[in-house]
Length: 107
Image (tube, rainbow, N blue to C red; front, top):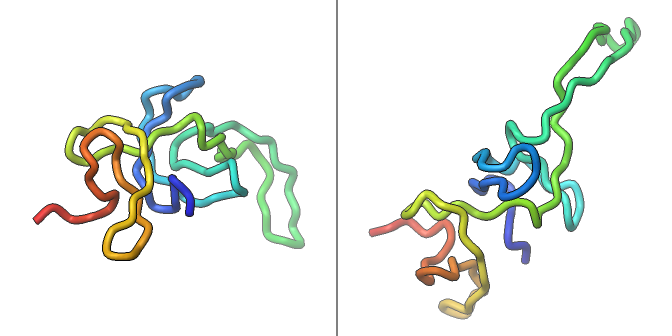
């Protein structure tokens, strides 16, 4: 089980995009994730009429290492560390600061 999965809200803790919050769009491999609005670069693209691709300069989101982001705790709005715990026979992610289950709705 991964500490950060698709759809999580994360904050970048290091690099040129430090402090930026975004949603995880996908996992590239075991270490890298793509975060919305983070690590966006300009890329020159050649036109390809066969594929219907126009040429020009486009924005492309590149992967970022998962060690450079922290999961955002909705209660505090800050990035926090995540651990694992067994609840009702299932392995779940919990925030280290207050022990709240990640993704659980407050009732």
